[in-house]
Image (cartoon, helix red, strand yellow):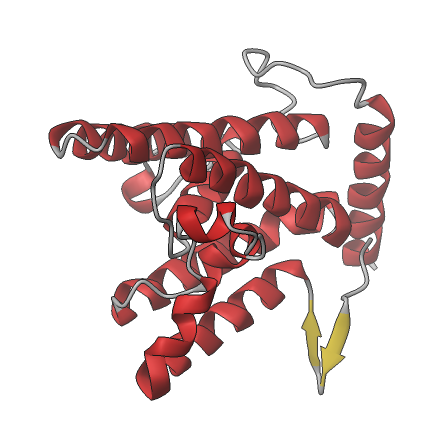
Amino acid sequence: QDDPWFRIGNLDVTTTVLVCLLSLVTVILYGANREVLVRFVLWPDKVWNGQVWRLVTWPMVTDGNILWSIISIAIFWWFGRELEAQVGRVRFALLLAAVTIGSGLVAAGLDVPLVGLRYVELAVFVLFVAENPRVPFFFGIRGWIIALVFVGAEVLQRLGNRQFEELWVTLVALAIVLLMGRYFGLAAEQQWIPHLGRSGAIQRSRRSRLDGMRIQRDR
């Protein structure tokens, strides 16, 4: 759980780092030959014609806004690594897969193309805040207030642009990440998030990992 998938020199490639690296590769490819990336964007008709890999690859493809793509990667890395440190690389990979494929299927059903890390990044941020609702951000503002503002802004923008299908994709991504996160022992204080099943063993495993991290830190 705590080991990386593999190493590149001194770099431990965890689930978070792997997603960030693949996303950075698409940023570079966009400058070199962006036509290559079209094969990995989620086009609903392509998915229904058998190109199911698009359900997995769409978040890691840049949407063409290079600066915002780099910012999204940085945000995902910052909050993703914190969550992964608590649940482990395997469970975090399963969580990301559930969000990516689940929201991708909804988008394909609603005939909505998907590209970019935006949906997954927002979902990871919301889960981090659900786990740490009182953590202070800039100017000492609590995390739950920042998350409420970000999600509210996303909803208002989708409503204002009459992008109702995209709004459904956003809500589904948030629902999946919160349900899966709670199942893996995150956001335990948030009783309003339903349980998918018994997560006592997972929570005990998580507590053991955190205790081990504290002991190692104290040494």
